[in-house]
Each structure stands twice: as structure tokens, then as C-alpha cells.
Length: 193
Image 1 (cartoon, rainbow, N blue to C red):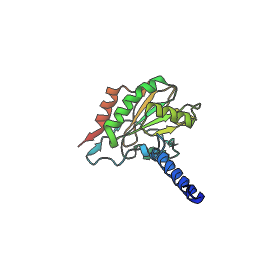
Image 2 (image 1 turned 180 degrees about the horizontal axis):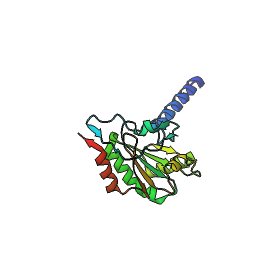
Image 3 (image 1 turned 90 degrees about the horizontal axis):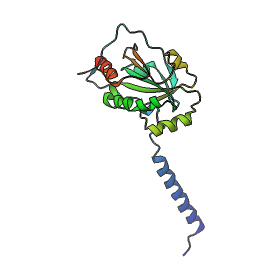
């Protein structure tokens, strides 16, 4: 027995709503590299050592790839930060992503790890696609005009910058940080309790 046309339309509308909800359910975490990737509260058993002789880090006023505005207070106001300067075409950057991901995982909420993508040719969609291919879990600043890159004297990627919780530029690693040396610096300024 055929359904009444009104009932048929209601079933079709309900099925469409269910399919749409299922499709969107896989997208609830927001775009890769957005504000949802910033660390949570600093663990209570963590303290930070200052690097008295280091200069102040250059200021940052930028947007993450999801459009969230961030500045130095957001990134290193409560904890140290590692900035990793990258582009989508840099194979050395891709190779270092495993090191950066390991640092982010091992230090957790005691540290902010953020990528600063700076190729003017990288559109936001291309950049997000590349980050998805790499499985990047860190927040990402899109710096297409290279304003932040210039303030940190980045000539070519990768470059790693370590900033302490007081906003001092502890170290720059042109060519990207050596994992052992980066961990040694982090262990010096992040003390577990």
C-alpha cells in the first residue's frame, strides 16, 4: 500500500536530517589547527624557571587557521611555548613534525606548541589539507604576509623558537630544533613537582 504523499515527504525530510547530523558529527572538533588545539589549564604540580638573561620574545598578534585571534599572553602567558615555523612545501618541516608532535604529547598542558605557517602561496584550504595529510594536532597560525616570520628573523623553514613562561626568547634553532637539545631546554625551564 503506497504512503500518503505528506507522510512520504516527512520520512524523506527525517532521513535527510539524520544523514546531515551523521555527516556533521564527524566534524565537531573544528578545523585542524584551531583554538580547540590550545592547551588546557597548567597542571598544578608544574613550576617554571625564568631565563633572566634572555631578551623578550617578539610580540605576536595573529589568527589561528580557524580565525581565532591569539597573542603572546594566549601562547606563553601562563607556560612556555615552542613556535615551529613551517611551510607546506618544506620537506624538512614535515620530517620534524614527528619531533614536534612528540614534544606536544610528552609535555602536555605544561607547554604550548604552535606551528606558524608562513608561505604567501599557501591558501588556508591548501594549508589545512597539508596539515590533515600530516596528522597535525597542534594549533596553527597562518602568517601569509610573513610578519611574524620577520619578527623572529626566519629566513627559511623550519625554525624552532623556545619562549619561557615570562615571555623571554630562550633559544632559536635555524633548521629546526634537535630533539635532545630542545628537551634539555624544556626540562630546565619546566619543573615537575
